[in-house]
Every structure is written in structure tokens, then in C-alpha cells.
Image (cartoon, rainbow, N blue to C red; front, top):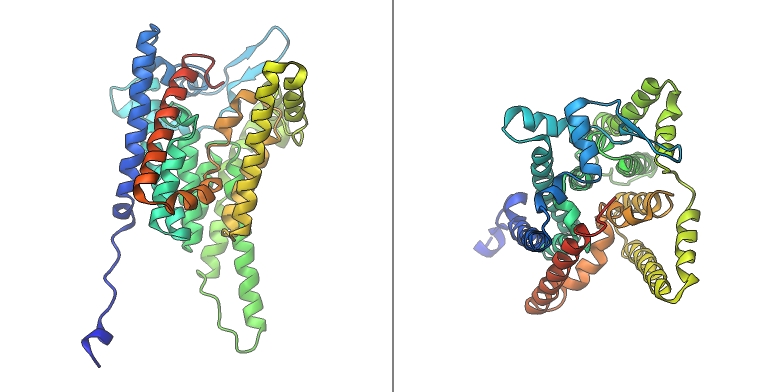
Length: 394
């Protein structure tokens, strides 16, 4: 036996060390976005800190962190906006950080989102690297960073926290860590209603793994599939829905309206699932005049792009857990009757839809990819500053 035959492959570096290039690139993009926002806001006599931590949903989260649940606002048209619509994990973390540091609740929310966005970037890299390799992993993180509404990742909102939990739960499924996958899915379910997408991914992958295992046992001579022990898979599947189900049932008990109480809370915000009818009407109304028709065409093109990317992922045989997760996130975002200006940020957790673009970006030479990414980062930073100094996210 020769030295060449006995040579073994060198051990791979730890995952987080492999993710360093992606995290550095992500941090650079977010730093650029925050710097542009600070300059833009100062020029308009506004506070960038206030825009990031003390407007829109951020105020509702900090109120829950400080005073708990029970606050509501009744609008002149009869709608009731209750803070029970906001899931509790982000306020819990804000309260914890406020208790152990001098930070205000609002600043604590910003720090949580800042750290969660880095965790989300690392999770996205882990998933993409697992499926397509490290180069695609870096590109996927950078594409997520340069989304037009990427500034939300730095706001005291729950999108970054949810994306981090979802990405790492999916990675745990991909690597057979079922208990971790279930626990992270439960935490995602305590963060946003779309946590059901993570639960669906865990359950789908679990059911398929049990099915393949049974099929292998029935096939003479077939090698048994390499799965985690059945008990661990079952435990992970049982853990996954506990967060979302627990909060929904608690809201139903608190409101006295049973399991459907949370739906009544969402109805007070005019949120619901109508299969996309309201969104279709919203788009159709854009074609009543010429200037708004351009916006309508843009919306149609954006939805068509999302569908094309998802179909491309199906054709590229992405892992079924990613397809299920992405499909549920897209369906809930596009087919809900909620405020239409919020749809871009509701789509942000659907990061696997970026994988076909990440694969394309990973093919050209490094210089070309760097130029495309840098140009997108500048455009996203300018748009984010313009957006938050205008109407901003709801």
C-alpha cells in the first residue's frame, strides 16, 4: 500500500469558520445600509434610531415587552387592534436583555434583531452549503442581505429572529438532528404565525423518512436508510408544533373564544387568508390609470419571478423540506388579505427561493459576482433609507 493510497482527506473546518466569508460580507452590506440610513435621515431631520426601533410594529413589540398583553386600540371604523396579534418570543428577549443591560426596550429589540440577523445569515449559509456548496452558500447570504427591503433585517421586528430559527431548524432536518429541528421549529412558532411553515417542513421530512424506512424493510436485500433513531425523529416532530399551537390556544383561552380566538384577533387587524383574492383585486386596481399601471406591471412581474424561482427549485430537486417551507411561506404571504405594503417583508423569510439565483451568481468570475453584489448593496441601501424615511413598513 502506497502513501497515496493511505492518504486521507483533511478534516473540514467547523461550520461557523466556513461561514466567516459570508458573515463578513453580510455585515458589510448591513453596515452600508445603516450608514446610508443615518445620513439620509439626518438630512431630513429624522432619527435613524427612531426609524429602526420606535415605529410601526416595533412599538407594539416593546409595549408587550414592557407591559405585557392586554393593550388594544379601537379605530373609528370599528376595527380593534390588539397586541395579542404579536407572538411573544421577540418581546420576551427584549424584556430579558433590558433586565440584564442598561438598554431600553426599544434598543434591546434592535440588538436582538442585529444578533438574530447574523444568526440568520449563518443559518442560510449552512443550508445552502449543505445543498449546493460553500460558494453558493456565500452568494445566498449576500442575496438575502441585498434584498430591496433588507433594512428590515436591522429593525426591531421579528423577521430576522424568525429567519434565523427557521434556517437552523431546516439545517437540523437536513443533517438528521431531529430534536434540535423540532425545538427550533417550536421557537419559530413562538415568533411569527408563519412558523407553521417550519412545522410543515419538519413533519413532511419526518413522514417521508418513516415511509422510506418502512419501504426499505419490506424490500429484500435493500440497505436500511441512514436515519436518526425513530424515537428522536418522533420527539422532534412532536416538539415542532408546540410553540405556535401553545400561543394560539393561550390567546383563545384569554379571549374566551376557544381555538379560533386568534383568528378573531387577526380579523381585527383585517388580516386573513382568502387565497389571494384581495391581493389580485389590489393589483387589478392599479390598472385604472397609467402611472399606477406601471406599479401593477411591476407587482405582476415580481410575483411571476417568485413563482419561476420556486418552480426552478422544484426542477433542481431541492430537498423536500426546503420546498415545503418555501411554498407555505409564499402562500401565506401572497394569499393573505393583510396590508399589501407589508408583503415584501413577509416574503423575506422565504430565503430558499434565492438558491437558484445564488447558483447563477456563483458561476461567473469572482470579480463579476463582486460587482453585481456591490451594485445591489448600494441600491438596497439607498432604497431602504428612502423607504424608511417615507411610508416605511407597516
